[in-house]
Image (tube, rainbow, N blue to C red):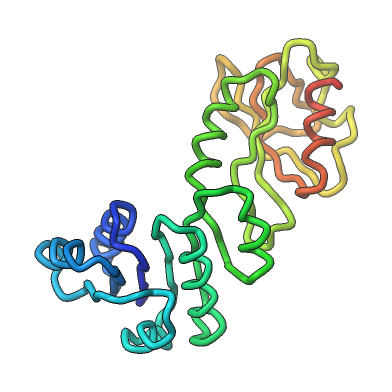
Length: 220
């Protein structure tokens, strides 16, 4: 694949090295001259100095034949614009944007960005796993954005403790994929699987039914 990485900071640098090691054709776009020099010394001619938000710059590096553009600068706005130009002017099949502010996710999706990665959300998810007030943790949004993979920890006081999965009605469009017990290996459950306190349940649910899933498994 030909992959353009907009932003030659730490994220762009390490991402590009991994992609190169995997055999992909990679080009890094970076505006800062000194940063370009340092990257070129290590990575060679794959580094191009320029603004990844400008159509002329993207045109000069062959964005029209790119399979993917990944924008990982420190600025959400710059990442959004770079992906939009790549998508709508050069018909790049896949665009991915780094996002610092999770509140921007709706805007990015509405404007056609294929995928977003939020370091803030990733860190928050790890924190919330330790908070009993947040039993439901989103793990992954599927490409369509309609469904999510979530993890729910069953609290000791939940009404589902000691009951079979098949005995309670899941929200529409939801299905349990995996159960992880405290002292047993993860397994794929059946309708006869009995839930225990502190079980971690991995499920697919529609985004609109997150709260319903939380309510059922927390017994509220």
